Length: 356
Image (tube, rainbow, N blue to C red; front, top):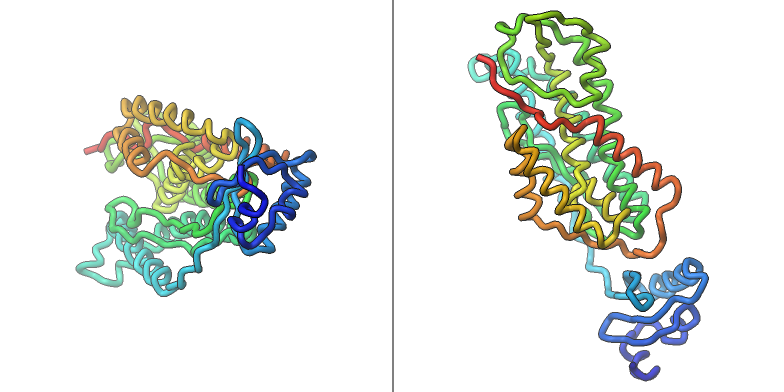
């Protein structure tokens, strides 16, 4: 254990006396302080946060087998924003989704450039669903004091989607487990709520056809999509299938993306929520989910790919600054909503066989 003089010299921008009013200090090693926060813990935790905040220091608070620990450091300078990159990727994604939407509705913009506009229903729908998802993350993060970037769209001319989605970058620690839940669920929740009317409108525009004439790829129906299909196109009859309008397909993709993001692994949105609930035990859950995805490869080979990708990218999750304050009742309701959305949007076999 350090003497008070050595400890004060080590922590530099705040004094042991300031901390001792809120915590029984038992040891200081480098930038890590161990001991026990006085009861009531949450009230004294608030006092400790204020000491570090006033000193311009970022501090992580965690529970240890013997009490509590604080690890502190200094914030890195903010990176310069290059908003032109976000804008360029967004414009390019409009182009790639217009192109794919046009080609998939029978247009040939390479021969007749104006036929590119035939892809606008799909383009608008998919960008609306993906954009609302990422903007929800961005706005929630900023409201909770988390440094996050505007969405980066990925303009990949995939023959089915025209994009590989979008993402935001989080450049600062998340303050609490509550904030982790809210930042994590905000994107899937808003994206899901936007995808629902997109699916409904698209299904209204979709038409029953003979199975032999439908062609294309047979899609699996998540529960919510199946319920809407049954409501709008009940009793198709034998030999009939539903040819999805591009808007319906964009909505279906939105539900698929929601399910992928809600998987409780890695740093996916579901991973954020799961870490907030299970803490360091979350790693065990991740391995269970990885195993389940491998087994689901019986239905679709994409699931083992996702399992491998998640493992390669890493199953560790950075803790929030405050790993002590428990989730509140609203957070638990949001966790329940996340589980419900996963049930409504996940389908074991999203992509079926190709019809000739």
